[in-house]
Each structure stands twice: as C-alpha cells, then as structure tokens.
Image 1 (spheres, protein in one colour):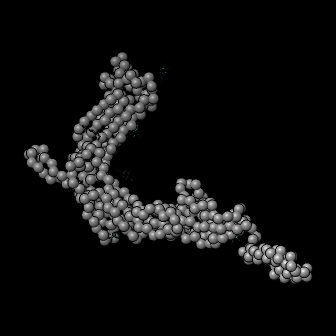
Image 2 (cartoon, rainbow, N blue to C red):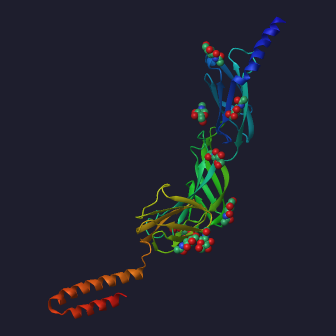
Image 3 (cartoon, rainbow, N blue to C red):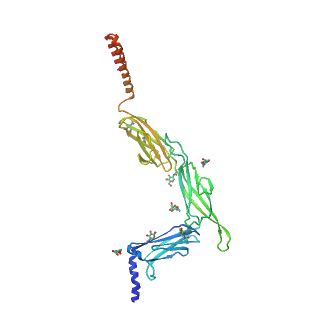
Length: 372
Ligand SMILES: *[C@@H]1O[C@H](CO)[C@@H](O)[C@H](O)[C@H]1NC(C)=O
Ligand SMILES: *[C@@H]1O[C@H](CO)[C@@H](O)[C@H](O)[C@H]1NC(C)=O
Ligand SMILES: *[C@@H]1O[C@H](CO)[C@@H](O)[C@H](O)[C@H]1NC(C)=O
Ligand SMILES: *[C@@H]1O[C@H](CO)[C@@H](O)[C@H](O)[C@H]1NC(C)=O
Ligand SMILES: *[C@@H]1O[C@H](CO)[C@@H](O)[C@H](O)[C@H]1NC(C)=O
Ligand SMILES: *[C@@H]1O[C@H](CO)[C@@H](O)[C@H](O)[C@H]1NC(C)=O
Ligand SMILES: *[C@@H]1O[C@H](CO)[C@@H](O)[C@H](O)[C@H]1NC(C)=O
Ligand SMILES: *[C@@H]1O[C@H](CO)[C@@H](O)[C@H](O)[C@H]1NC(C)=O
C-alpha cells in the first residue's frame, strides 16, 4: 500500500507539472522514399531552476527506419528514412532520466510525409530585361518570365543524380532542359498553367548483390502563371503652361496592367524618383487626374514614376508657370509701348537741338496714338 502511494506521488506531481513544459516537435518533410528526414524535439521548461534535471526522450517512429539519434539536455533529434510512401506519425514523450515509473513530463506528435516522387517547388519571376527609362516618355520593353524549379532535398539524397526537365507551357509550347529553369518571353498576357516533369537518374550499387543499378525518380509540378503586362508607356495629357494661382489639370494615361503604383512630384528640375519621396497613389485603372496650383512663377518639371509587379517606368513633363494675370498679348503690347517711349526719347534728343517746339508736340501725339 505504501509502495503504491510512493509510486503514485510522482505521478500526481508530474501530472500537475505538465503546464510547466512544452515540447516542440518538428519534421523537415515531405521527403522522397529512400531519403532521410530529420525530426527534432525541443523541450522548454518554464521553471528556470529545473536546468539541472536530466530528461529522457522516448521516440516512437515505427515503421520508419532510424538512421541516427542524438540527444542533448533539452533536445533530441532523430534521422529516419522510409521505403514506402505515406503519412507517418512520429511521437515522442519526455520523462525524467532514471525514473522508469514516472509519467511523461510532456508529449507531442508530428506527421511525416513520404512520397515516392521528387519534392520541390516551382517559382515564377517576371523580369524586366531593359533598364528603367529615365528620360522622355517610356518605350516598349520586353519582359522575360523565368520559371525555376527548386529541389527540396535536405538529406542530399539526389546529390549524384542527373536531372532532365520537361516543360509544358500550356500553349502548345514544350521544352526540355538540363537546367532547373526556363526563361519564356511569353508575350501575351493572361493566365495559364505550366506543367513540369522532373526526371532524376543516378547509379547506385545494389545492397544485396553488389551490382550497379540505375535508379530513377520523377516529380510532376504545376503552377499557375499569371502574366502581367509591363508598364509600356505613360502619356501626360494637359497644358505645359499655366499661371500662378491657377488650377493646372493634367491627365495621366498609363499603358500597363493595373494595379499600378503611381508616384509624382513637381519640382523645378526633373528628378529620377526613388523610394517614397513623392506623392504615392495606388490606381486600379489606367488613368489618373492630377490637379496642381503653383504659387510662384518659373520653370517646373512633373516627374512621374509608375510601377506594377513587373516594371517601373518614369517620365517627365515640363511646365512653365507665368506670373498671375499677365496675358501674352498684353506682354507684346507692353513691349511695343516701351519701344515707342524709347523712340520718342531718341527723337526728342535729336529734335531738341535743331527743331521748333511745334514738331515735338506732333511727335508726342503720334506715339500716344500708337500706344492706344
Ligand atoms: C507540439 O509541437 C508543435 C509544433 O512544434 C507545437 O506548436 C505545439 O505547441 C507542441 N505541443 C506541446 C504540447 O508542446
Ligand atoms: C527558483 O529558485 C529561486 C531561488 O532558489 C526561487 O526564489 C524561485 O522561486 C525558484 N523559481 C521557481 C519557479 O521555482
Ligand atoms: C513550396 O511552397 C510552399 C507554398 O508556397 C511552401 O509552403 C513550401 O515551404 C515550399 N517548399 C519549398 C521546399 O520551398
Ligand atoms: C541527420 O540529418 C541532418 C539534417 O538533414 C544532417 O545534417 C545529419 O548529417 C544527418 N545525420 C546522419 C547520420 O545522416
Ligand atoms: C523569344 O525570344 C527569342 C529571341 O529574343 C525569339 O527568337 C523567340 O522567337 C521568342 N519566343 C517567343 C515565344 O516569343
Ligand atoms: C488571372 O487570375 C487572377 C486570379 O486567379 C484574376 O484575378 C485575373 O483577373 C486573371 N486574369 C486574366 C487575364 O484572366
Ligand atoms: C481644373 O479642374 C477644376 C475642377 O476639378 C476646375 O475648377 C478648373 O477650372 C480646371 N482648370 C482648368 C484650367 O481647366
Ligand atoms: C479625368 O478627367 C476626365 C475629364 O476631365 C474624366 O473624363 C475622367 O473620368 C477623369 N478620370 C478620373 C479617374 O477621375
């Protein structure tokens, strides 16, 4: 009876202590049959005074085959392999060391995925192959779409394999490559599906009869390709001249797939726009109306940068701002008047020395007439 109580005591204590521990259990699957997976268990204790305690990690991984096991004070790692595809639960529970009767401190379970196929990912990047146009309005550029396959092989199972990649672009175009990527200058925008079949082949020495054999594994991958149209041009429609305190209305027409990030800035000089030192607007259409009022006269430049997921394009628009109320016609009139006054002055100087007063009056009335 006393013995039973003694055996139960630690049980009660540890059952209560479960909240003091957590056990993180992770695996690096999915893996290919024959390759190795690493399952990692990390014990965390909230009781800092507990570090002197020793723990034992009890693993259950059958029917997987254990390759290696390593255990430190608060963590344990196993490498396992499997000959058959499927989803395999791997569990671990932690007990105090040298306490076979004790209940587990904490336990956890993880599910490892094993497939008979090659594992990896397809990634897509749309790259602009021309540099960003910095002067004048943008010109049309070619976009290159790069589709890359990244093999997922943490245990280097395929290190001696040679790969062949069969690409199907979904538009009747096929390509076979030895490199894990293709660049397609898919000119038409839209959605399509790209298929890739990866074939890996390598030589291996048989384990029973030491004979060389050819191993082969394949993998099928599919990705949806959404081709965006590059920002091809920016058209600024509106006047290049305005007056102080007058509304200047400009319309920006953009040729490119929205959503577009438009950034504009009006300064005395044209400047390449970088970062967010400009007025940023997100537009979902292809047109943006801009209204601006100038306080001072002078020469200005509207710098515009437009980008979508594919391209960045920049353009400039010069604006001349005249002083308020000065009409060009009035300006011409003012000049005429000034020239007339000068003429009168010259004439006056000449006539003053050798002509009577009467003629001078006539000259004055003549120039006055011209001014009117
Ligand atoms: C089990 O492991 C997972 C993954 O690391 C973790 O999120 C979870 O909290 C763990 N459970 C316990 C009881 O520690
Ligand atoms: C850890 O030990 C210190 C001093 O030995 C004690 O004051 C503290 O309460 C202990 N902490 C826990 C969580 O037991
Ligand atoms: C593949 O992509 C998925 C989703 O994008 C991601 O969760 C996974 O970690 C990736 N795997 C590799 C091996 O990059
Ligand atoms: C166990 O797996 C890890 C990670 O993949 C690796 O670094 C280590 O070398 C493996 N150990 C053995 C014995 O294969
Ligand atoms: C891709 O570009 C190359 C050279 O620039 C050209 O020869 C080929 O026809 C283009 N392919 C497509 C599908 O546009
Ligand atoms: C492509 O697919 C996305 C979402 O899947 C959709 O928003 C978009 O409108 C599609 N584009 C075309 C051109 O069909
Ligand atoms: C610009 O637009 C505003 C209203 O949006 C209007 O009041 C103003 O007259 C316009 N300016 C010019 C020069 O058309
Ligand atoms: C821009 O202005 C034009 C005419 O001034 C108008 O037709 C158009 O709808 C406006 N666009 C936006 C996005 O406000």
